[in-house]
Image 1 (cartoon, rainbow, N blue to C red):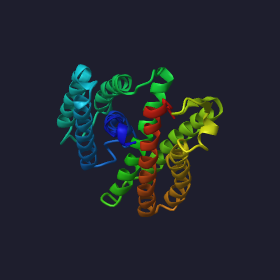
Image 2: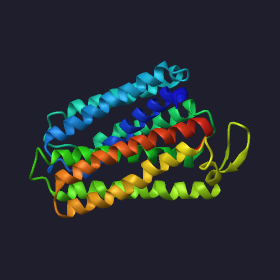
Image 3: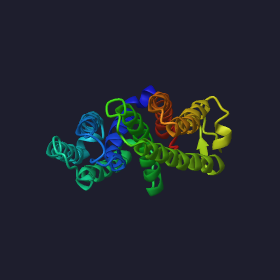
Image 4: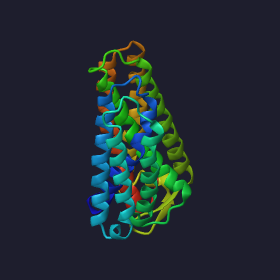
Length: 263
């Protein structure tokens, strides 16, 4: 993983920041205080800026980085406009995400040393959305400690969205296990299912376990705690889910760069 660590972090920061503002649709401004928006938009601006800087200092970044700069400037502009506003326009906060996702597609082509198609781009975006969604649910759960009158349905909706995204990734992983073939470092081509049992493929099994299975099961426990409105317990479990998803996501990206596997 160390050979591609800079590229992995670049894609992770950029993808996270690009899709994260879209999740604010789950939390209407009339129900969540302004501090929640300021925290999330500020966080997105910082993480997105780090991703653009990392991309600029990469070998491929100096040609396309102006798109990333434009994205961050628009993100900062929208954040500044609604910083103290009591009425948030989610359509406006989503505009930077459209440009950010476009920049992410450019980065995918520039950084990943394999040919990728439209479906691959879509799967990569879904992977980033899984990462963003688990962080969003965790931060939202933590906000219940500050604003006790928040409707429980907001946290429930974020968990449902995370479940759906994990389900899509699980289905794609199953499809890959049945269809994909991998050429290992020795030039031997084998099915993805067989590759998982090799020394080189072992860490991909870890990625599937922590990136899909663990958070999917944890979501069941989180759901039960939400039903009894124990938001503190749900938030604690979401912290564990965040660690699992981050761990799995890093390994997923490592196999994307090493073997061209997009799962």
